[in-house]
Image (cartoon, rainbow, N blue to C red; front, top):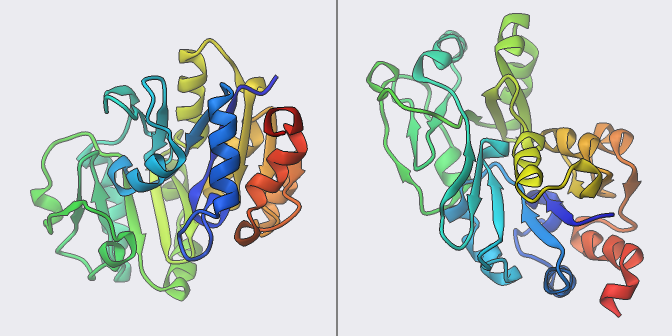
Length: 271
């Protein structure tokens, strides 16, 4: 029995213009009011998506969000942390060397701010994120000893294609590297993805993955799509996501594909 609905944002819940289709809003609000858990599951920090949380009415005491691609599970009402994991400064040493040798940018994120590495090629991550986050340019040797959520390589798509092709087996073993957007390549802890945070949240409620429905379109959604009792790929999703999914939305993200699928599955709750 499905009790939780997990939703990626870009090109899944969101239109291409980064807004939520009113049909998606109305459908998810009704399902949330009926008792289903609606969980936004994203690589972004919670303050970067707070407008969406409020728009969907996900501000009750038992509402949570999965952020940083699974590394942080946070309560929406209290902002208290349910679960958190990440990387140390030393864990990024090999990645920093790779970026320096190849002329790539890199931003390192803790759970409160972003550190664009000032000793590397300038990044476009701040312009792309467009969120109320503090960006503190810092040389790698000056990064504070802290727990970090991930590193991000943000540049043009062709350069990222090149970077992916140059990743060595050692780097692929050390990090879970995922292309969350054409211009963003994320480096997480080797065992980290959205399914990790969702597993922790399901356990919190006394449920398991058979109780989860997950929607996604891209490489960083594969873990939760594969783990969910009902993994749903967007019609506009990448081929690998569609191949891993149990089902597919009847229309794409710009036509409220999430709502269209939910209306097929939960007609009794939405009538």
